[in-house]
Length: 151
Image (cartoon, rainbow, N blue to C red; front, top):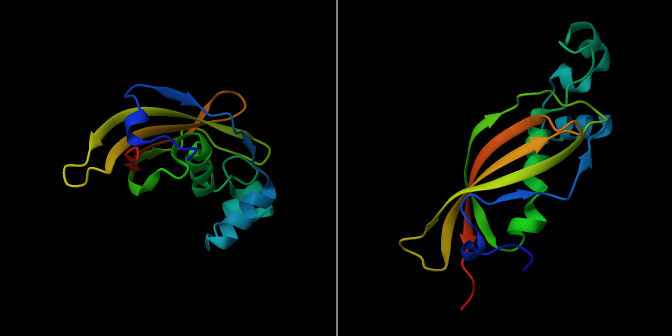
């Protein structure tokens, strides 16, 4: 598998992910409509221009979070994760707009072997999303159940 196994993760290691993604107005409208988020700040340019804090539509924060969570999958967890256990301490320190290019950085915070199942363990990650200026636009802690290396 392309992903890392539980044993491969080192506490404190930082990964700067290669995959970058420029977000578009289409992404924002499609994601907002697919998730039934009818907030005009995301889907109505006129409303956002007249009423929003930035004078233009703001990227849906859940889209930003999904991209930040996704950019490291191929490098870290593809085929070796058994699922997410928690996502906490989610923050959006800077706004994201159409045309911004997002990339991610992941830090391994901790790892704990399963007490009941020797084929897995829990790894806690800090995911940070940055824009093209290097500003942090999103941050979250995530616990993932990771497979151990097959014997």
